[in-house]
Image 1: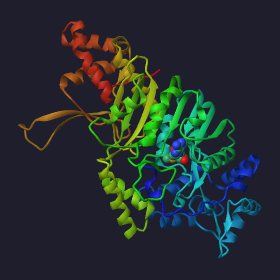
Image 2: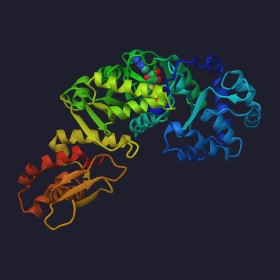
Image 3: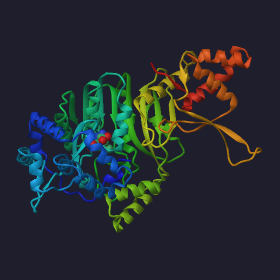
Length: 506
Ligand SMILES: C[S@@+](CC[C@H](N)C(=O)[O-])C[C@H]1O[C@@H](n2cnc3c(N)ncnc32)[C@H](O)[C@@H]1O
């Protein structure tokens, strides 16, 4: 979910003016960011504060954070309260923490003086991988610009390539997190958004972090990059179903059903990929109709591509509705009740029966007919999807398409997989079953095994490649190699699909 509880879409309050901030020279932003870092806005100082509230509902975090922030010595504590956690500080505290910077940042509208003389910041500063990023307070709704949330982190992990690349596109960049991270791996990055305010904040964020190889372009979907191709495309398009009558928020709603905008992106993405390019999306998909989700997505991108869908457990309509309604109405008052009910009714009217958080990756297929692979897994917060996993899943598709490739591949059972014989309750007569359970932070769901399959998997896991694994399997089972290959390859292919074996990617 897009930081559901942060998405407090209360009313379309006027957003703070950015015009003076946009005109501030890049060198000023760089120097300002340097001062903030030197004053203590660094991951080792900020992370412990954020972690204190990690398991607490966002609406309930404020007092806990406040308690720990007050214990921090100035200036780091004051700067965190002011810039990162939307708290007012006294003029004295601001002056002590910011010194000569105070009038300068006040003059461009980054800080303002409240009627009682306290100082507040109408923006939210976040810290991600040492990047300092300004975004809007989402309660403003409308064109407020989202900062990085859980979904952004999940997108970045899955999209960041393991090797240097030429070009990358961040479609719907918001405050620019993915584009700025991609700028370390790509020679050039294009960041687009339909919301000019998003581009303004993203430009400021590029300057704050001394990043100069990102080009920002305004426009809808692929309009700003017509005819261009990229090695990596990363996108978290708006995907929340929009009930009638709620305030619009550009960053949030993907259409009435929720998936309309994302499906339009999917229908065009293949033409914007270089031959070895990859697109990675973070989308929550509504479930409806007869057709399987992976098939719907596969039909939309076109059959010349391969598609990998890593899906977390389905979120019920009720959980979805209450999460987004509580984001809009953190006091959980009557308005919360009304909106939660309205959202459930809206989903039911669209025959939606659950929402699937997912990472989807698309690549040109090496075959005329592409393949769609779905790997159901645990929540992304438990087992994050990294780009190396996506590499392995695409390699698995390629192996499974061609026996020669499969036979020469090295396959391994994921590290720390537990193989367990289980039975429900005591008693020698009770039947038991054999399971492979993956490590807590590994992708996939438990796979049931037979003793024969376990033996086969073990032979392959211990061998340099599948062919030698099958030779060992045939020899120890005292069967002819041809027979072993014919018998065993379908089981090996299935093991690759379920994540029981993964391809070792060079
Ligand atoms: C969910 S936010 C994601 C922002 C950022 N990429 C992230 O992951 O944090 C979706 C972004 O898409 C932008 N957007 C909405 N409709 C769009 C469209 N038709 N074309 C391009 N961008 C769009 C919104 O303005 C918003 O910045």
